Amino acid sequence: MEPVMHQVLSRFFQRLHVTSLFPRRSHSGSVEHVAAPASPHSTRTRPTLLVSRLYQPSNLRDVGLPGEMTCRSQRLMQQAGLIHPSSPGCFYYLPATVRSMEKLVRVIDQEMQGIGGQKLDMPSLCSADLWKTSERWDLMGKELFRLKDRHEVDYCLGPTHEEAVTTLIAHQTTLSYRQLPLLLYQITKKFRDEPKPKFGLLRGKEFYMKDMYSFDMSEEAAYQTYESVCQAYTRLFTRLGLRCVQVQADTGNIGGKLSHEFQLPADIGEDRLLVCGNCSFSANVETLTSDRCRCPQCKTGTLVESRGIEVGHTFYLGKKYSYVFSATFNNPQNKYSVAEMGCYGLGVTRILAAAIEVMSTEEGIRWPGLLAPYQVCVLPPKKGSKVGEAAALAEDLVHSLSETLPHLRGEVVLDDRTQMTIGKRLKDASRLGYPYVIVVGQGAVEERPRFEVICQQTATSMRKHLYR
Image (tube, rainbow, N blue to C red):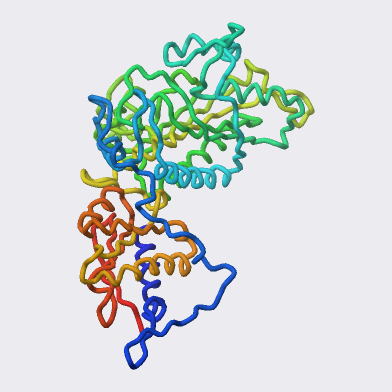
């Protein structure tokens, strides 16, 4: 993302001429006002996004729950006004975080729909009868949030939806093999009664998750679907610029025949991973009961232990749920057959926090380029400074970026807090993690105007001139 943006901004400044930002002057030195041609599609009617108007309240930045600030991502997100603790394991997601999460959801939608996924929304309030039928009502233990309605009927807040989606398919008695594979997914809030919530959005009681469920006509077809989802996950993390490791995993209380986790290597990760340096084998340590030093796949490699943050999980379920709930389809012989199932999760809010955890510095957030709440922040000079006349140029630059580069519309903000020095605002910009910061300073009023363009991800700066 960063090299592409470097090229885009370089081309922008090459195409941007002095006369497009600065008013012309007559021979006498007076300003000649040049009327710009009206355009029905002009973005000039759009209000400038001002940092002073963004809701990231400073009075919340240092407010936390005692003893909770145990990882980098939580500390940075709270200090930047991106999240605010409500109660242990629950957070307010403030506007910048919601923008970032919506961008992540769009990327997830593209990948899931690219392999045939169809999006739906299932109830968060789940009947206890369904969970008792699958025998998970007792198996889940205290992790399951349970409640009763006024009629003393038991419900739970869904941490996952295998029972619900299988019941939905079971009610469709006309499902044909021609409609398979069927991949249904949702992106909703999930609930889990964590005994010790910690690490901010990495382990909470309330979180956003993408959960997909597949239905196939045969075991062979189900394995093909399973592999296609794993490949989509790999593409997703590659697009985000995150190094993710796919490891063998335990099926846990979800059950099934096969399971893989997608792990972001990180020192604070709660999962212990074993990776072979000689072949492609990798596994969660809990899946190996015997020799944890020698690779079970190539037999010669040594297993190296590291830690990771689980951001995705896939399961091949077989007929574990479909048989119990009678989720069937009409096969080619026009007889009922029980569907083969898989389920596939992605921790949406966990991906956000994990990305910040592994990419950021101790002083400032660094986002995956696709997920940054805003792409560019423009800093005008301090009010009352010698180059104060360039302040209007900064706002024009914001509009020119949006007009010239359509994909930056709504992505460029102006830090209008000109009572602060550029240095202080640069520090804030670094903390908030705008991928690019454009400084409109002394160079903007020179004979050949220039700007400083700072790439936060690489900590490099470019000086870009306007062309006449």
